[in-house]
Length: 378
Ligand code: GLY
Image 1: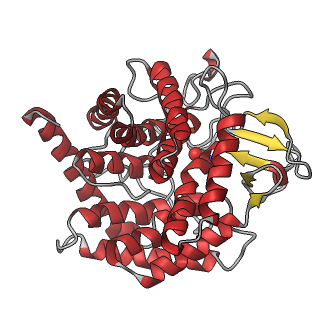
Image 2 (image 1 turned 45 degrees about the vertical axis):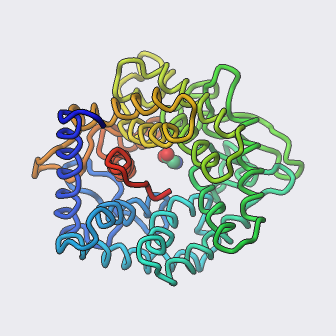
Image 3 (image 1 turned 120 degrees about the horizontal axis):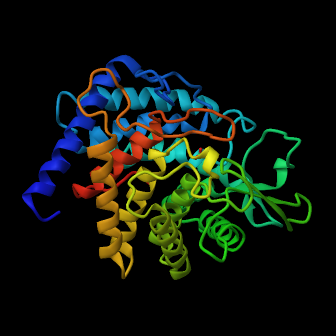
């Protein structure tokens, strides 16, 4: 950020997002919002993978000005969310690979911000449950728990899981026990080998034989089809591999993050927000995903600090965030609780098309926080 014009848009964007989050907190309180299709956020279950993003958003805003009177309730609400989330840890069949999304943004964030012993304890418990999902023969962290006629989910891994690995890296740092980190690295290596295609595109879901661990097939998942390029999955990959490099210093993760970033940026071109799948056929080019743009922007700003090509990634990340503010933000509008419009949850299932989504809002604010010199929560 080097001109007064750029600082002005950034301050305006952050202050609008922070003010709206403080206002939203008065209504949403300690519930778990997911999407805001009609202006107001819905309420979701604490078991759902998105349950950490609201406490995470509260903590981003609280962390910016912890002494301010307006921010104080945010910490209390985030703690109440965290206590409810702890209930989910008692049922190992309701938790899945997304423990990182949930606990990095709740308990671990609380521990980092306030030194909360409960936050640390809950984060370590979540890390142990995540580690227990490791498939020894296939060397991946098992994704979901549900049963499906389309695939044997006992042998399934998904690209989103890359964002959960920092919980394992953190657990090794906290405990001095390297096992968590080894599992995370083994999973990252499997994903780099089996999910990233020769042209740099990335698949969402890979099915392995649950008994031998051998790769069986690719599934389209939330993308259009096998061989397509789900935009948010590409963003998860670029951001997740950048974080794996930040925690481990292993150059192969930086290279993978750069490949994913280069593919994302090449497909995005001059746009700010991608279509839900970069390879969606013409008749399905009707839904955009601002959450993919926000996740990618925050990841690019991470890469900016890590890569020899950091200036390119910094410029690309800032261009996207500024574009989100200027063209997709709800700004000061009292009619919209969502911060950025036009995210897409799951196009193939027709769920949440062109709506504000809580993780879009979280990563938008995380990217703004990074541009203002703060760290994100991952
Ligand atoms: N299933 C994770 C996502 O929608 O990105």
